[in-house]
Amino acid sequence: QVQLVESGGGLVQAGGSLRLSCAVSGASSSIRVIGWYRQAPGKQRELVASVGSGGSTNYADSVKGRFTISRDNAKNTVYLQMSSLKPEDTAVYYCNVNDLWFRNYWGQGTQVTVSS
Image 1 (tube, rainbow, N blue to C red):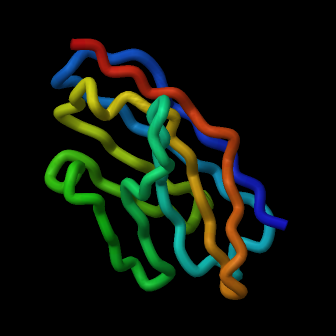
Image 2 (cartoon, rainbow, N blue to C red; image 1 turned 60 degrees about the vertical axis):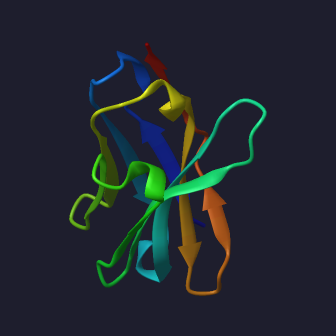
């Protein structure tokens, strides 16, 4: 059973930066893809960024050039470095793991609020 714990959210002014962390425990060797999703009020949850087991990354067009996903295998932690934040980045951010059997696991979410 994979468990995910996110941290690092908060309130930041537009143009600022935040780094989210996702600590992964349990069955980490069966992870296929780790990703960050976000959900703003009244909107569907959307993929922000993901990193595969081989290190390949994928980003939503809206965050390319501003966000960076990285993975520290020694610490079983995935990070999302967010820079040049905009008010439209305000959302609850969720860590997601998709395993070798295509099962999804979710963290509890962390709130990111960007003020204008």
